[in-house]
Length: 278
Image 1: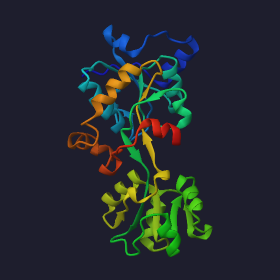
Image 2 (image 1 turned 180 degrees about the vertical axis):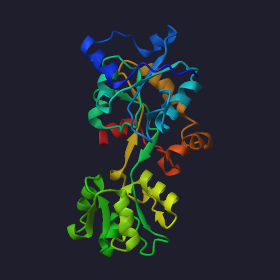
Image 3 (image 1 turned 60 degrees about the vertical axis):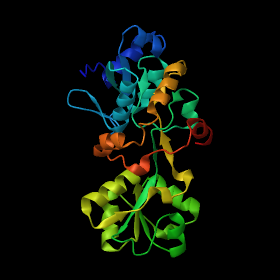
Image 4 (image 1 turned 60 degrees about the horizontal axis):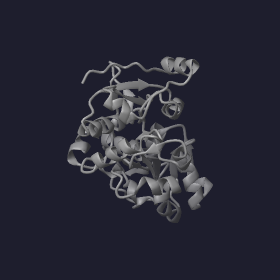
């Protein structure tokens, strides 16, 4: 597959100045032999450009594989800023957006999402063997354990919501400092995203990552592929093509290099429910 990237932050900015691009529904573009314009931001490991502008990251890998199953191999990568993804889709400058976008109620008003390609939540790092048997916020609260967490991470808000005492929440600059706090014994447990926790556990070998599914569902978010509101038919075909692929051995092998782990497989939750509840 030959990549001919035309998009960039500058290109999108120029397009915005030039006015809206008139384009028919994606099915019409495909029928006319035009490439599918894949919009994404530089947000590794979710999505990012390669040296030649090719779309990398696990969300792009999944999207391109599903499109291939549908018979679509003409893909035109369009790189833009994160904030420009939805406006570009709405304006018809791109046909599909990836980038690891959470399915949220506010976004569902402006674009349509595929069924989820993954669920993403938080996890913890603990000393090897998890001596205090800590798996979730309730365990931390009941045990009086000290939790280290990067300042500004959503886990601070989640811990407070559960009722963990403020003096048990150790805020540090980043995940490196979380690891140092756990290793030194200054903290009993360290909070971060599940992707980060799994990577740190694999790379260091002296801490364990807890199971992200041990946390309550309200802490989870789901990622979907964004489609224009007028592209219901091709979105339905995309959803159909995802069946049998999402969570398969083939898919997990393809995305493993980008830190997508089996715990990220979305399960049975539907986009309709996510749009109403997130």
